[in-house]
Length: 343
Image 1 (cartoon, rainbow, N blue to C red):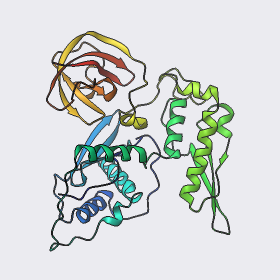
Image 2: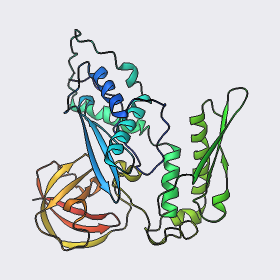
Image 3: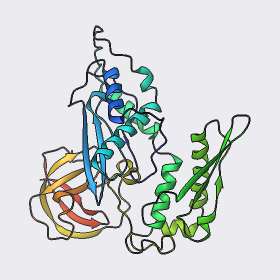
Image 4: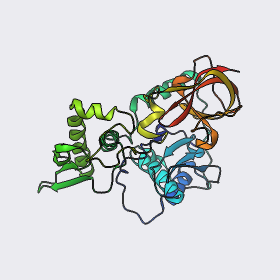
């Protein structure tokens, strides 16, 4: 078995600008395979690293699951094709590893070295470890990703290339200071520029500038009110994309880490129906209903119904294959299940 990992499961905002990674001619999936091989001290198999790709509109997002590293999962960004989606997921896993000491712990493969036995955790140790991971937070959620997410909620569409501009000045003493300008913002906000603190790296300087912009936007009541409006009701930037909004994927804005969705709900079926849990991922899952639902969104997600952790009662243990009863609601993302009970 693979040595235990000390990094949390990472799923990213797919619409945020990808974090800067070190230039490399090696394919991210190949890099990830090499890392897992060194970490596990053995050759990896197809079952060790698996990719799941979902399509949202005309874009794709992939999740890579590393069963050889305690089942860690990393989600990539929304991209135009399935191949790039898998590369993006692999890249996010590598970025997360680089921000921890896990890469330093991965030793070169030694075929003659005996595998270390993995100590099974007691329930108390598992609870302490999970609490520590939650306290440390998600290392991939940065001011830049949060800023992009907030701006897209304000303008109700994707950000285009060149609408978020970072410029960095390097001083003689080695310090870096960055500015950020977001032309997608409405009115005079689109011409404003925010400057961050002087930092020892260019990446930290850009994050500092993004943090300044984020705090400034959050302090404006009108922009925050605009960000809270449902899709299709915001004014966006200079009337662009009016009424179209943009696609919100189920991994947007760290939804798996939230206690529940803040999206407004509308009842569809108030009388309970039954169904089978197809998949459960600790914080969300998918249900296959036993009956056909007469609704315009019933065909989305291959007929599957979303269920979030906040709608699961404490007395119900979710797992693939169990039968449950539930009522159905709709929100801007499609159909969801609530009022869950064991069937």
